[in-house]
Length: 83
Image 1 (spheres, rainbow, N blue to C red):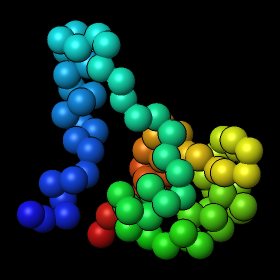
Image 2 (cartoon, one colour):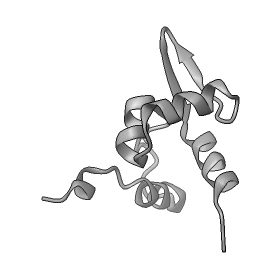
Image 3 (tube, one colour):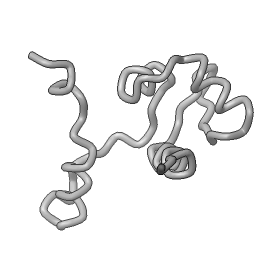
């Protein structure tokens, strides 16, 4: 089994929800630092420094920091480069 098969199928879920077929399907909105490391692949220190530098908005719950998936998409679009 490959590692990619365990990843959530975010785009597929969003397409189903937008099409109106699944009104009650919950989608994951907040990601912890550990989940960002596992899903996207950068180090935990990278994500923390992006948050501390104000590059990536976050939600504080107790001592944990969570990143909204909408803010994550904006962060990726902002830092995407083309040659």
